[in-house]
Image (cartoon, rainbow, N blue to C red; front, side):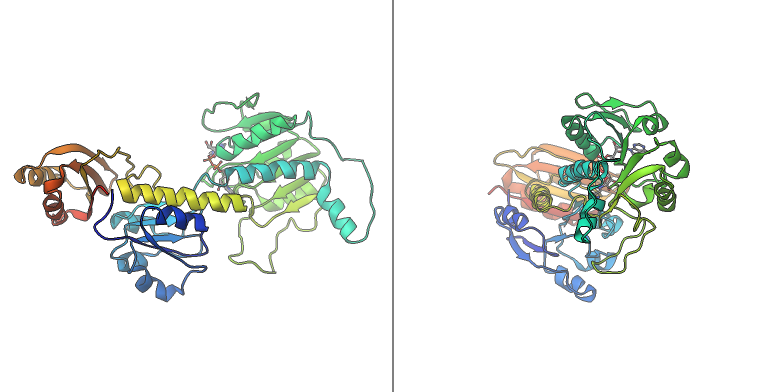
Length: 406
Ligand code: NAI
């Protein structure tokens, strides 16, 4: 299906060119920029486009969304969507898509690397040799084979880590608030305490929620086995950093790998400080768990594909701020997509227009959230434009467009 005029996409912040290729293959004209424009220029710039693609730095404020009169959809080519005013986008009928899964494997691989690094004190040995010190030793350095890995949060990343760890010969136990199907021989723990008590390595893969904030504080760390290791590549607030630093200084823990911090700098450069610096066998990385070229390419394709599906069929199944629907296209028919205020009587008004026009509805799906309704309606071709125009003119309509078959 296609639109009446070619669509235009603005992709900012050096989004992977794979995204451009996906959109271009749908006949969309793509402008690809390395950076985000100055804040003040964004509203007027965006007003020219139907599709906006950003990463984490561009702030898509209410002002930007209000200025973007043609905007149909926003792609966040990253995981987080805090930089976008999702409520305003919803109210304006603009779905937002992100890429929650594309860097799962990258994070999982990093964790396996770090488990071995911690177990062999590789960070310290490497630093010593760089400084000209020869410190060949075996004491305290171990294989990971046969050791127990405890995974807290057995979602996309956690379960991947479990699969890879098992392939390395580790025993894997996990704790999750939801019931999860164990992969391979991974085993659920009855409680977090049970997991902490039996693990040689504990790795955290929970989301940032009120329940996970500070879930690894002093008392939880104290329940970990003496000489064990803690890894956190989830969110900075999940661990109480000064308590972790104390446990490392006292020798209760033999090491830690930390990728995320309660406060992280917005830009690269010097001056970052944390209580974890300069402690033995502590690997500190600058939130790079998901930062690989493969993940960037996968993010580009995942989000661009979601945008293209939305533009060509109205599919919103992976949108973060929108009622979700996927309805197969009917050959030879026209599709009307209507976003409206979620107030009583709208469907009646729309169906009256269809019936007055003597048009035949071949398929109709309505999904709602508390604020908006999203209707997909398939019609015979001859009357679809007239019906579309009349639906668009309803006072309850927020956004209406018609897709024609190519
Ligand atoms: P996911 O949503 O697939 O899995 C999270 C799991 O945690 C779910 O199974 C959920 O039931 C569980 N969970 C929630 N609250 C819990 C609690 N209180 N106790 C135990 N389990 C709990 O998420 P995914 O994709 O696996 O990501 C996990 C974390 O990794 C997120 O915080 C995400 O922000 C972070 N992340 C970090 C990256 C990095 O660069 N370091 C890159 C990608 C994700």
